[in-house]
Length: 169
Length: 316
Picture 1 (cartoon, rainbow over the protein chains, first blue to last red):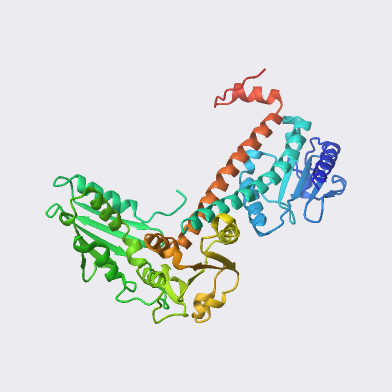
Picture 2: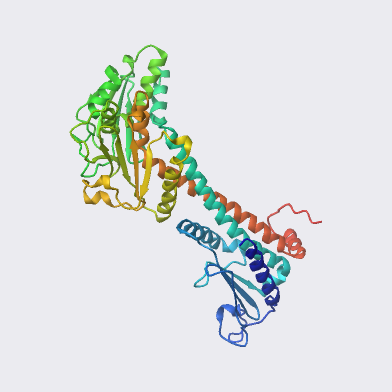
């Protein structure tokens, strides 16, 4: 079970390396506008086939590419009620700070928990392989953070309960 | 501070300051609010520097918790027993409050230790007044007698418009709390905390603690209770208190702990949420640093030279 995360992340990394060939493309419909084509979804000639990578039913990753932008959407594992609210809280926290992250989308795509939007400008500013490193590390960090938050809640609960019950002895 | 303390820091501070400043000092007229809607109003005027007037407002009791003249059952006797001649109850209480006391500092015992003990007791006025009915029930338990309400759930106030239930019997007392929270995140966190209580009780070290159970639906002990009290979004917690837990010196501590159980859980749920926010902010900082590493050196150099704010970069 522990090995599948490595395979999952390697698969995502390889797909991103293949898909991230972005070039500047001015908008075809409106003069002097430059929009991320993956968000508009107007012209089929500019959009490539989306790739869906599933680790299991609960976790999956959708990668949609176009000529000047790429959109990566993730669904995070949520086993029980507590993990559900922790994930929702944490991802909303991150999405609200999308400005600071630059490549993060403010609202996740329908059906997913978090989305990235990378345009050709980002690729010009930043090294492509480092950008992919960042995305993969982000995914790993989210999983780690949620399990650590859950652990801290359980530990604190145990401590609080022990202190309370010790008062009666 | 993991456990909630019985004496109110606010009252203790004012009492000590008043004692230290003897005949000098200024008039005091302060109000404060504590958790679960308990308000204090303390007044000292320099015309009578040895006399303090303390008014206390208590949480609004729901219909099923009986109250005599706005005070819990047995509160007046408890006050007289705890403070003796130092404190006098003023009737009627001040407007907007449930209880007004006149504290005469001249009547404090001269022995330093006894004086501090009485001041500590005065600062614990909340435990004395709100805990009076619970103390009576548990005292009966320690003497292995039962009052007229044996076997029936007795409703006692611990939060505004909410009560918890005590079912007194000859050899044990069962205390049931319907746990209610307003926020949906609080409900989930509290449920996981309460389940930890049940788990923690099972460890060998806590064998002498009261037996602890949690259930989503009202437990059978609450059969006689009114309908409105039987809805709880974070389940029901049951403690079984034995005479061993309420003998002698342990009685006061047990009363305080049972009285403030809901506030204790709520306090730790909020601490937990605060801690989670701190963690998340730290994680965001780490991720942004990782993103900065992805920027090419040319970009960083451009920003360093042209940007208005100077950050220390070591460009190797």
